[in-house]
Image 1 (cartoon, helix red, strand yellow):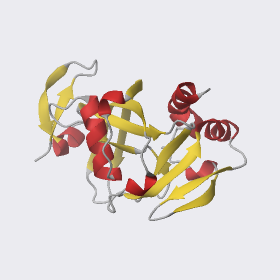
Image 2 (tube, rainbow, N blue to C red):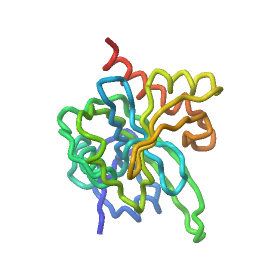
Image 3 (cartoon, rainbow, N blue to C red):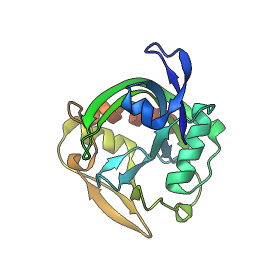
Amino acid sequence: MEYLDIYDENGNPIGKETRENVHKNALWHKTVHCWLYDKEGNIYFQIRKDENQLYTTASGHLLTGETVKQAFAREIQEEIGIDVNYEKAEAVNIYKYKADKIKKDGSEFHDRAFSNVYVCEYDGSETNFKFDPNEVLGLAKVNAKNTLNLLKTESGNISGELITNTTSPKTFDINDFLVMPGETAFEKYKDVLNKVISLTQK
């Protein structure tokens, strides 16, 4: 049974609950959005299996007792298959996220999350990536500056690399990026892209 720490709307801890009940009863909890980048200013987007679009490098819930950085390392290991020094991860921002939907089985799903966005430099080999086949189709490596401009203008495309079992060149456009109803890709990803740019600009 997976338990999550739960909070009031102001972020004060109030106990713990099962993951199922957290989403059934719209309880506030913490998640981590994990981003890897390299020193050349490239950022890694995960290609989500369920959506076949680009999202965070990895993401998930904080389990009971976990710190954000510990969860960062665990999610990267589980989804991407590599070990990172989570102490080097840097915060971008914390966002309050609310969403409600009806699942395919007719049950209600309520999300009330404090989403902790963190970045960490990756200087290892891309051949070390071992993707969770249940969640991840691969990674897209793109330049952060070029991506920011694409999302701002919503026109044209950018060149990058598609990393699956092999690495190959690929172009991406605005429709490749995962957004939820009411969101824009620029607003969703601009803070993390600007963070990577600030960390890697010469």
